[in-house]
Length: 387
Image 1 (cartoon, helix red, strand yellow):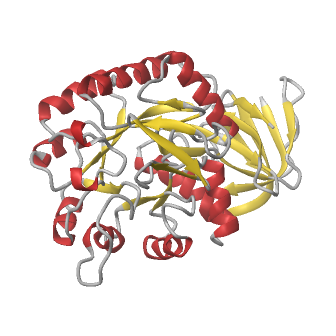
Image 2 (cartoon, rainbow, N blue to C red; image 1 turned 90 degrees about the vertical axis):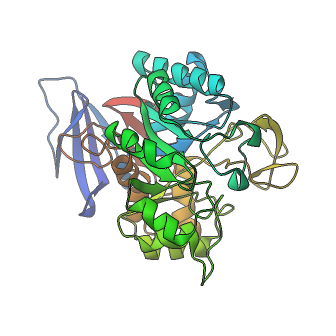
């Protein structure tokens, strides 16, 4: 049992108020002022005086960190990643796969499934995000062209089986042949379908949004740019109210002014912060050389790039993204946290149990100091990081 005392607690729809939070049996039991410490049970008091108490961050799009890529990670590496993510305020995440050979993707899915079943010591793996191989080769970004394929119902079923029914999000270019045949299967399985790595036009994107696509992968990146006479996927996403969009808040993938403009269109209710981090995140200093998607990358000025200058994912963490939103882009802290916790929980269907600090929900809570540094991470009522 834990009693978080005297912190500025973020409650959904209410905002920050100085309150206590009582955690018992992995759940948030009570949120109130001046909760008395129980004398009947062991209860550790966590002093949060003048600190922010917010829901744990949820990264639904990360390819790895600390030199580890989900395409290659076994159980020991997945445990290591979960601990690293917890140290950055993350309590839940989707392990994200990459375009590769069918067998390599299946192997990664099986490894992630095994780790989900066995459990990890830090942030929870709550499922899989499949980014590729069903994308438009002309908008592949960092994805290797030789492994891009057309979607089929049979292949989708194989991937779902390999994952142990743990795929929660999948990126597909809506213009590909065979998409209509698999959309209903994905929706029936409870998988959120995201449009991305796509050259689809505005009308096609509108049609996709009306027929099962509800999310957009890293808005602005790996898709046609928005033109005032050809708004494309970006324009359709900004114009369609019920569609959620991802933003990489590193200040490199999307200019801060464009981030602010997108939020004005989508509001903080339909915008989701992601890292799209790769193995280089948290792995060391500038000029570090690693591989991503089988090719060498260089980290320079905070950007991960291939030799041809193409961006290869980001090197930020979720708490980095929140800080950037607040300190560099002028976004309200409560709104930034919402885009990093509540909104991603809704996108992948886990909002009934996490994503906000609410009585009865899982005790996924982080304590931040005034500099937005992570002091404590609590995952399912267990402290997974102390700063």
